[in-house]
Image (cartoon, rainbow, N blue to C red; front, side, top):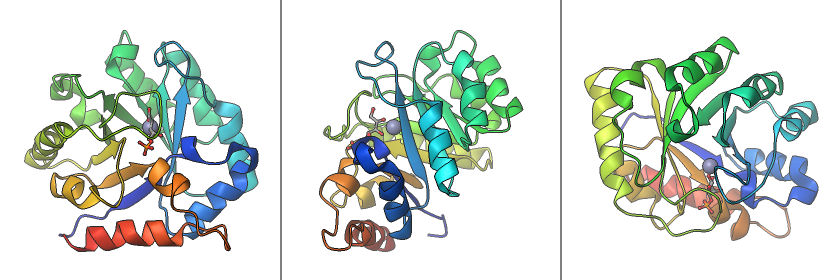
Length: 229
Ligand code: DX5
Ligand code: ZN
């Protein structure tokens, strides 16, 4: 399998009291992308972090791509702020935008890479008209709002469907999954065509190598599973 796999730890499960160090440590331990969950207590029932924190991570010296997952409604107002704050990808939920094509265009105009996010029960129909404009499709394998939830298996069918659409059109679009992913299921998820794996609690929750404050063991295990493909 030649597809490049990327591990994207979700900082939702990091220790926010020392976030810079946590991000440095997952990256030193082999993570590829920083997954940045933005929640507004409106579109989802939780409240997290905004552009100021993204900017602080950039100023701290983070050079890895920052994958901003917007769970906010409305979305357009905050996009330029995240672009200025150093976001690489900006993904949003189609239900949260009145004008999906306009929002995708806005992300692109701001110099970021756009992606659409689909909740477990959200149909994929808008991809028909948007896939060619996207850099990423993110499939939620839990209902958004919280880390540490259980993986919903029917999302694997959706992953196969999106992989088929991307390949049939010869597009270079990342397929990312988010929620309940860890060493026990990452291989099965990869087999369904996913190339980018968000893992929050699996990395930050259980995976810390206590002495070194590093995450080499868990990230190494995730990569070892992927090598079995
Ligand atoms: C949930 C977030 C996820 C979450 C994943 O709304 O989008 O990124 O942090 O956490 P785990 O990996 O613990 O399911
Ligand atoms: Zn997320």
